[in-house]
Length: 197
Image 1 (cartoon, rainbow, N blue to C red):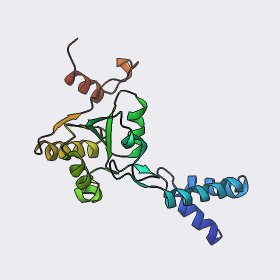
Image 2 (cartoon, rainbow, N blue to C red; image 1 turned 180 degrees about the vertical axis):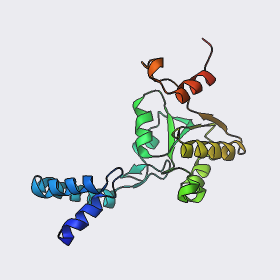
Image 3 (tube, helix red, strand yellow; image 1 turned 60 degrees about the vertical axis):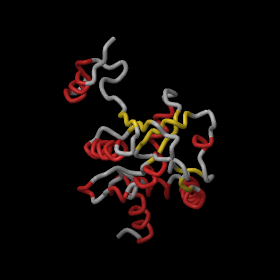
């Protein structure tokens, strides 16, 4: 029989995305048996992050200050606002070095089947931010999943009636990709969204 404290640790690890009962059990045994100092560091890091991090009052990403470093950067293009689902998406767009505007993080996406509607993501804050008189264009960079597409459509309709230019990031073939390895849906979308040379 498994001790209750071990069961509690296994269940706690299962909250992580993609971690099922077997993976959680392996992680728990590893932390307890092979890396107790790592387990202690992990516990402290989680406690510290929860106690320290808050949402940026402009873009809604995580920060230790009232305003994150990106929003505080006076060199950014304040007329453009890129909307992403999660802070990890913001980091990916930022790593491209191709976008120099500001961001807004929804902290989720619309998913009616999961009971996630407009009130469950930061939609009201986005509308307030986008309607500040400075933003001209909103670039929607939600994921190309069913939920991400639904979110993009809803945002586009809601933002256009406020007189904003709304654009959507393009999708298609990956750089360096070969046609024979691309799925038909991606190839079809690349053909629809082709551009003149």
